[in-house]
Length: 194
Image 1 (cartoon, one colour):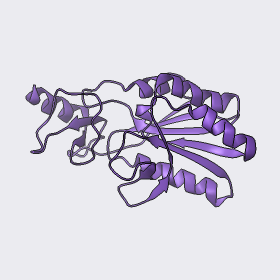
Image 2: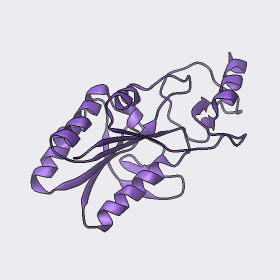
Image 3: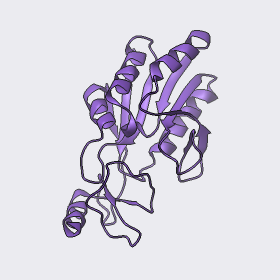
Image 4: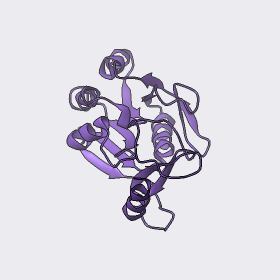
């Protein structure tokens, strides 16, 4: 039975690298995959999943209006899709997560979604909240805080590296805008920013 998996982590934990490795494993065995990534993520080329270690692959960009299930079902009708992989899954809408569950439950296609659990204010992203509610398997990808403890939080920083406590939930960035920290250090630096 196919499942919906949610691989979550803080920034810089290797989510995209892990996704690209899973995709490679399927394709190496001659199985077709479909990759999706958030259209809003413009750090690299749009429609490309890019890892910090230099791996990349083309992907279908999605936004809030994209019917992921319809796109997959259309291709699956002509060529068996062995797996759907979604990067930046925190940017999915709740209905899109329901679509991913449908792909697993009705079409029998495993879905592997990779994303952040929380934003820079320690609030769940809507897509992540729905994935936490519906996924058959929740898998945490580990990252490390500057103190050596497990990093679970994403601190937004300004150009001088100071913590940012307020702003829009979504601001695209990498190491220049976010630091992965343990809860203790996240709380200390966030409180200093307020």
